[in-house]
Amino acid sequence: MSTQTTLSARTKLGFLGAGQLARMSALEAFRFGIQIAVFTDRAENEPVQFMTPFSTSGSFDLIEEMVEFAKTCDVVTLENEFINSEILREVQDKSGTPIFPSPSSFALIENKLVEKQTFEAAGIPVTPYKLVKSDEDLEKFGSEHGWPYLLKSSKGGYDGYGNQTVTNLEEAKTAYHNLGGTTGHDILAEAFVAFTHELAVQVARNETGTVVYPCCETIQKNHICVAVLSPAPVPESIQKKAQNLALKATETINGKGIFAFEFFLTNTGEVLLNESAPRPHNSGHYTIEGCVTSQFENHIRAVLGLPLGSTQMTKPAAAMINLLGTHNRPAVADHIVEGLSAENGHLHVYGKVHSKVGRKMGHFTLLGHDLRETYSKARDLTVGFQI
Image (cartoon, rainbow, N blue to C red; front, side, top):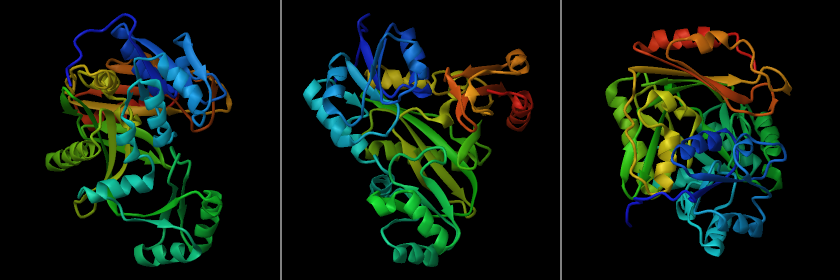
């Protein structure tokens, strides 16, 4: 396939999903003079809809609506994975518009069960798991892998939604019911592994080549990422191992686009693949200022067949703090002066109209020379933020 060498002023890139990930990708697309169209299934106004006149509201289950949207675009890409690969395939076939990541690639990771099976078959170590269908399965998994363990909806979970930690059989039965196991949804049991760090790596890939971002550490609280540190404070050999596994995983699915991979570094030094995402990822937000080419710019480059940009860090250390909603109210960014005044500090507010407690409303990135010092300062600068 030939490399894209020209960009028409009429080039239109379509996003399935209109949240903050599409917004930050769109900002990079605008730099190249690319028009942006969005298809959203949400009732409320979303961040990208304020940025473009080409906005369509509909359902990810209504193929004809999506086909008509895709026909208006030169390329369509994903902001989330809450869609079915067969629907993507049909939309691509009927519209004639290419979708990246491709429906074939997406089909290999579209839910947590298929994802585990795909990477396990490729020889990539994954966390122990099992599809559970009965009380007996719930009890057996606990007996084999120990309590507590995690129950996950195989499709649609994020930021703690669709996941539940269970410490005994009665809790497991309740969680299985609440997650939809008794109404036909596939529920995955995952063992807890003793780990020292949670790591993440982003990879951009297309016909022009492949680039891999630094291995970073994600810090979680209640299944929500609250901070990201790059490069991860682990030995370089571990960083390289995670990067190599991320590259292998991307090649396994023949991915075109931007992909993110989350890992556990176990107490015994193993690196286990936990989850993947066929899109920009929260763990890569620091790359906007922290790398020569952000994950969002390489997202645009990758799906349009453009040469990929450098992933080298611009400073020795980057700390990103997620700004979570503090009130259930119309969104207002308060107490932001210190963050805006900080040298090498960068505030991003996503433009969501309504704030909810725990909802990702923005992020703050601080660049520096010493990782521990940079992270400590970033936390101090954001302690009073309210959105």
